[in-house]
Amino acid sequence: MTDRRPPFWQREKYTPYLLLLPAVLTILFVVLLPLIFSLYTSFTGYRLIRPESLWQWVGLRNYERIFGDRDFWVAFGRTVIFLTIALNLEFLLGLGIALLINKITWGQRTLRTIMMFPMMFSPILVGYQFKFVFNDNIGILNNALQALGLSDGAIPWLVDKYLANFAIIFAEVWMSTSVFAILLLAGLFAMPRDPLEAAKVDGCNAWQVFRHITLPFLMPFVFIAMTIRSLDVARAYDIVDVMTGGGPAGRTELLWTLIARVGYDNARMGQANAMAYVSIVLSIAFTYYFFTKLMAARRYMGGAD
Amino acid sequence: MGRTLRKRLAAVGLWLLTFVLMVIMCVPGLWVVLTAFRPNAEVLAKPPVWIPENPSLNNFAKIFGFGADQVAIPVPAYFANSLIIALTSTVIALLIGMSGGYAFARYRFRFKNGLFLGLMLSRTVPGIALSLPIFIIWSRLGLIDAKLGLIIVYVALNVPFTIWLIDGFFRQIPKEMSEAAQVDGCTRWQAFWKIEFPLAKSGIASAGIFAFLTSWNEYALASNLTRSTDSKTLPVGLMDFTAQFTIDWAGMSAMAVIIIVPALILTFLVQKHLIAGLTFSGVKG
Image 1: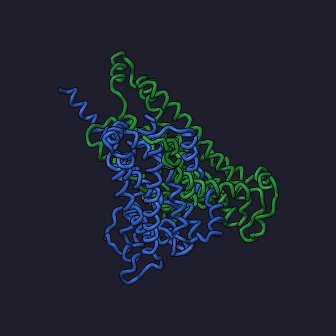
Image 2: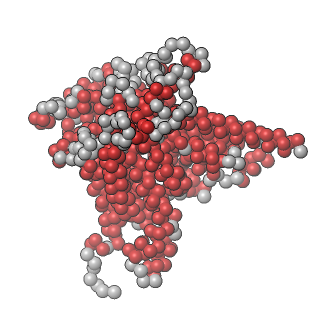
Image 3: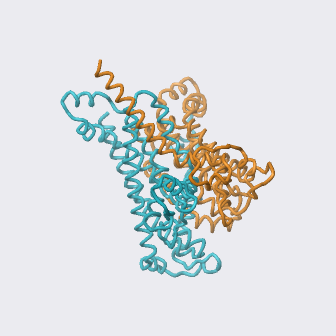
């Protein structure tokens, strides 16, 4: 052993930071720097077609305008409702499918594979697929309904206010239910058998077993699924952009399609970035909420081990 | 005897019920896949023709420029762009992710939880919200409509999730193994490549496949950062089919199949590891 201290990059204490440096630099350059920039432009009247407007400081005017903008708040409310309905439906359907498949002992692998089918579709494909299914003239849904004699006209699935919103939620749920199902199934597989047997011996009925044993055990897996889903929930933009583009007349406008329209189509970048910031805060709040729930559940599981 | 029979019947009934439910769930996707193999006339037929009567590869031939009539959409160029961009960004994201995942799995250091949370939160920023400022900065740097521009973005998009997964896989390998190797005279670097890397290889591969699929399927950013055949990817190219007044559903479905097939194969390969990695790092962290 020599007395000479190694240079700092070889010291054990700094190794983890060096190992993380590439990751941190990438995120700084591609996520944080643009975010700081967009935070700045959200205080300017920046328009894409007039580059000099980047230096036109307008203070909080963009944000003030947002607060008075009815379209924005309608889209905001619709996004929150969309997320709430979609995530809850995906959770309930995913749980149902997972419980069903978990009961099956023979040929389970086949069913599991079929279940994974929607997971392989990219959001943009899901969008096209359901634009196709729900199309009022040539869509397979109307076509099938007419062939079965259940409807005689063309139902305007993607035009009517309620039907169009139903259609985009349907597409989103179709795409993401299997993610929940597969993660909850993994949780069910990991579940110890003894408490279940013990509860049955003690005379609990199926509902009581589910409510007091299965469900609490599954909760960490539910939060993992929720965290993963909230990481990429904005992929719903792809679906909606393709299916309806937020229209007709803004009837299916979500925060994300509105941002794209204001930023690119109307070229009002400053205004769009202010909106984007509100949507980022919304996303981070969603994810942070589930992440802390996950950490709590994880500690609980660790203690139970 | 009667009771076991009834039990068995109930099991078969349950299986059938689940099977039918699953198939119904798959119908919209199957419809698109089947449509790729039928002529356009059959798409519009009333009542609907479910199974193609004369399945053919015509739609694929058209897309790739064989046969009498062609589609004026440069699918081969899009395919090449998608492949180059997805592969390159995956390899880089894996290298960065391995280094970062190893740090989280094997070291204790200050700000560890904060850094981890920060990396994860960076992934929550909606693609469209990120695309506006990136569009402005990239256009200053000349990275609009360039493959490199998308590659850089996709690396950053994949790094957090790759770190999460790889962290989980390294945790599963007992620390003692590499410590023993170091006692026997290996450096930490050698111990990593000879002991830990081979053990985590399948996990790292599945993280790679996952990163590849994310890049392969991404649309929101690509649609705003690409302009021409120099950099347009398959998901963006799909939009070309609707540029005309009418939509060429059959051709589009054929292109959809081209996008799905690699995803299909890779998802099957990765599913087991992916679930193991996610649940492990989630529950046992």
